[in-house]
Length: 134
Image (cartoon, rainbow, N blue to C red; front, top):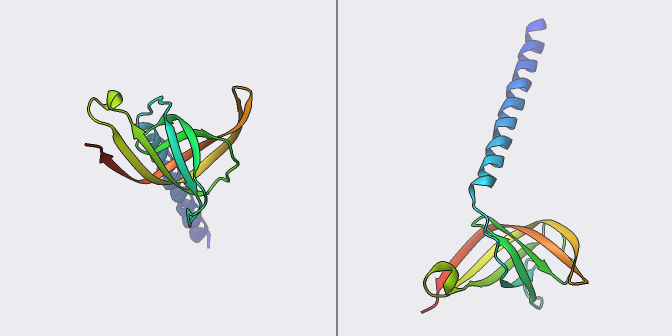
């Protein structure tokens, strides 16, 4: 009867090893996307319906996989959102580019900026479309 418990322990150990490798892979993947310190106006709609009035905010940094922005209202971690922002021509050496993205809030932090209470929001980008303006 000793063999099954050894196999179970080994299976658990292998499972733990695979889980750790998976986490390390995710950590590495996070660092692959380069972040750009960009302060740009952004329009956000929250919730599944996205019918609510839009919220204006300001980005602090952006990557192809996520962004951090600041807004005036509370928002919950896990909230779905639609984002719209324009990358100016001088940043991308061409014409202005409209970016529309869908994502999810992964972290929220209360902040004070210019003496005003704000919410800092980190979001993961799940999908985005790039539209070049002519």
